[in-house]
Length: 287
Ligand SMILES: [Zn+2]
Image (cartoon, rainbow, N blue to C red; front, side, top):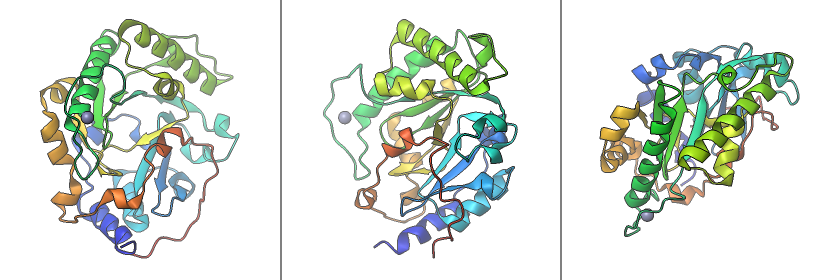
């Protein structure tokens, strides 16, 4: 039943959404632009409501709006509140930002008997995504050392390279910083694809795009929780079945929501970019 959904979401954000060591380790997390996606599909850009965030203020807005998805920008901004308006991103000054690979179970298909849970998750497909992820992490370890892996909620993982530096790959052009971040990502993604594969065309474009958004760690991502899994070692040691158990916030909080009834389009977030039109000042949903 639709009316209880925002209420259940609000309950998660008020009781289950807590700051962890992973959030604390994430330098630049509070220089990101944050967006909420509401149950009716509308987006809210939080930085228009408040320029700088702490976890507690992010949590307060999440409890208030009860979003289905909580997104953050890949880049860290000197003035994140200026990013939202179309064409003005240049005046917000991106100062840094992680490199992200969104790994799905495409490519490198491991044979398994494909079986999905009620949340639409198949453990065999996730094993496949894990293998691709580990290969990528190995390749990226020769360039960088600070990684965070986040379960994307259903089919794979987001690999965040926190110490990525655009000037390692290009001569940084201060006149056009966004283009610089884009070209650096293009160069690095081409290199990774060459040394270990792991990209199809769509995911290649995602890693190159510096204006993309990605789900906030330990928030909700459609079918299951968007659980942070830690660095490479933690990720490698954790079994896929344990990841799923820990991520099922609906069970943890005893709300047996059938996510597939919501007809969520989890493909959409991948192509949602910061400068698309935003509904900036919507009233909060009733809860
Ligand atoms: Zn499968």
